[in-house]
Image (cartoon, rainbow, N blue to C red; front, side, top):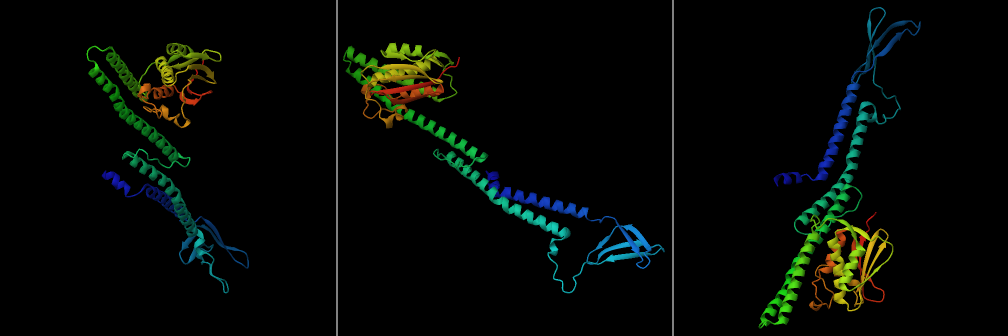
Length: 394
């Protein structure tokens, strides 16, 4: 904790900016030092002293000029008669009427150093808004993660942009949304399971009190409620296993969807229709797919008294199973909610049976097989539930 507080005294943007300043300063100083070392010794020059009248060379030398601050440049020249002369070139002076020197600071080595300083200042000023914008987004992500870690599962961060920070924000939002949905689903599952388990238990208790001997009616009621309780527990366990993606719920294998639908249709007394050419094969776990079709048929029988039709047909790269009934249908605003665990349509009661987990299991099984389950309009009224699964390629 102390180490974190120590690092927080200097925000990330300030540390990045100081790093840029330090890098520019080091480059400037190093370049200036190299420039000064390179120009510390002037190059060799040929100096010739000639008699203007006769044109005779009085002395010449190849020497290195000596720069004296304030006095200009000096050369030592050996004359032909053995003497040594010092030739001095004084600094440039202004002539009468000539204006002040223009930008003397921009000449020579000092001019180059001034240029380096201006460039360094421009880099320092120009880099600040770029670094600050990046670190503001990182700080926003940090605040979002802190709030999320404190229990606010609904928090989301800004994911604008197309760089690594935006990608990280999008992945965080996606993970937070999935976790929030999973936790809500589990909370709803546990809360509703505890409520739903009370009803059959209460009926069992009432049936025992009414038994008054070996009453066949009471025994039948107890048997029915025990079967309902057993089904509820089985569906809760299956829903929990399907939510855990790492759980092994069976080995995927080629499954003849038409054959599976035929068996379940015969069991439920529904009409089976196949369209298109076979084979109607998908890759999946047979017992899960059987459970999905059975739940759709039981749901249709529970809410409709008329005929139920099951249609199996290919659709592009998918296999589609449609279960149609002639019941009251599902209102458009309820077609997504009916797939939520323990949700019943308004007006439905325990007389119809079921606990509201059947359709939720169908959707979970479909998603487990990389498919989907939806409710659509049915021609002529009623409900039409569609199970769409990827078709197995030969």
